[in-house]
Image (cartoon, rainbow, N blue to C red):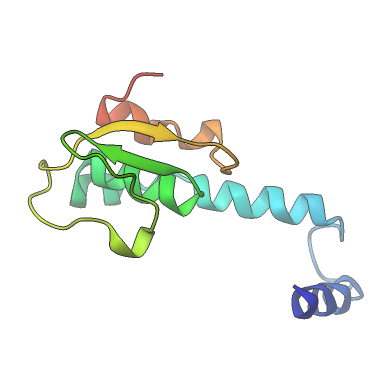
Length: 112
């Protein structure tokens, strides 16, 4: 975090950057990038897999039908047939999910 702080301070000295040096703006922008819906990815891997990737990328955890353990690690997402793993539950506590990413939920049929 110290390295990031030093780099961001140096970048803030540049006049060409389109954003202010307010760190809240940066984190808001980064969260929006993580929440952007990728319709091509939904088409390629299916709605539940794409929704799982989005949720885990944003810090949430996911549990699938027929499984007791919560999926926490993006890099250990289950593989196999696209329609094998259906999302049963989501724990979004302390995650950065935003409403702009809710299209992932609609395509997978997840109800709030």
